[in-house]
Length: 373
View 1 (tube, helix red, strand yellow):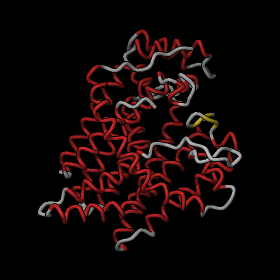
View 2 (cartoon, helix red, strand yellow; view 1 turned 120 degrees about the vertical axis):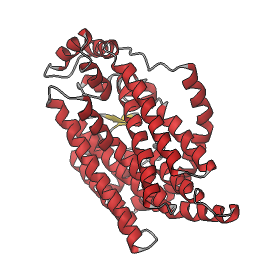
View 3 (cartoon, one colour; view 1 turned 90 degrees about the horizontal axis):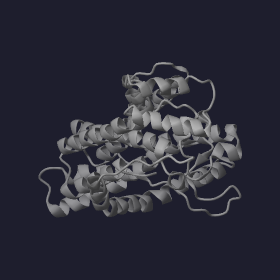
View 4 (cartoon, rainbow, N blue to C red; view 1 turned 90 degrees about the vertical axis):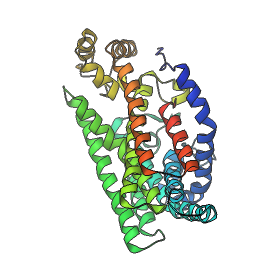
């Protein structure tokens, strides 16, 4: 089965090429700062939860042998970059004092970065079970190796560890309480988004408003929390932290749009998932819902395919992808990802970050908006 990947314009390619090195450095620095603290949390877990977590994040294989296949540390990078941005954006500080403040803020943000990544991995473990996804990062998903019960329990343990990270973070009791509150409300939004996503499976008519609200909760909420928690660690006031949260949330919706495009047209060798995986299970992702609600002839044909009470066969997946494109779902999702990214950058401008950190965040935004995995 061959499904063409999303096309990139020359301007897209130029922007991605320019953002790539800067974003890669931000991601690498975040991973270097956060991974030791993350490993310490995992090491403290009881067996077999430690084994499941290490396998899930890509540190070792099912036999416990070292492996390499970890995630990109996008969310921790966002936490640390927003901490730097908020600290360096404070008015009236000298350059030397500003550098010191940025270093302090970055160190103070590490527990939040670890907490956000723990919540992310909790959600992935549970999502793979609920979505029946067989692969994660190019190899069997944890639940297929260790069983559904162990995957669920491991996710629960990671969520608890995330809350403990913020509860034990340095700072005043009020700041710790505020951080835990942000993360708790984020998890509630994640659950609401996942519940909506599951409901869509059996719902005949899903509106674009419903689908965008699901993306806001399921993906936008955690990136918004990452940006907000980072800004709080950087000393941002409530209004400024809210701007950072909006930056992360809009970027998260763009991230979900790209993820949905890759779920249909992504290259399996790059994404680590079968081509057209979302279409196989008749998932009502954003491009699909845009196509189904387009009022076109292709929308009617796609609806007929989706009304079958079974997974689509490989040849039907190819047809479904063609129908989504013919109904305008692909072009709408690409354009909407661009609009959401611009909304994120507008919110970032309102936060008035320091120039160096602002460039880092713009590079991250460009990378996420044009990623291929």
